[in-house]
Image (cartoon, rainbow, N blue to C red):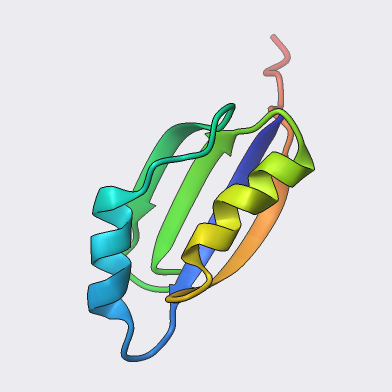
Length: 81
């Protein structure tokens, strides 16, 4: 399953967030495809695969001490030729 999570840094937690981003180890089964810092809001965007919603939630919960997450299940759109 493919997910996206947008993270808005909680005011005063930017240093903690940057440390967390550099040291994060995703749980087993979660594969990060892209981890992007954005210029504007949201502050970060993560695109990742997880075997289930529970595994995705366990991953996202690692960021809640320093950011507000918004997660969506993503479905690839095939280009019609």
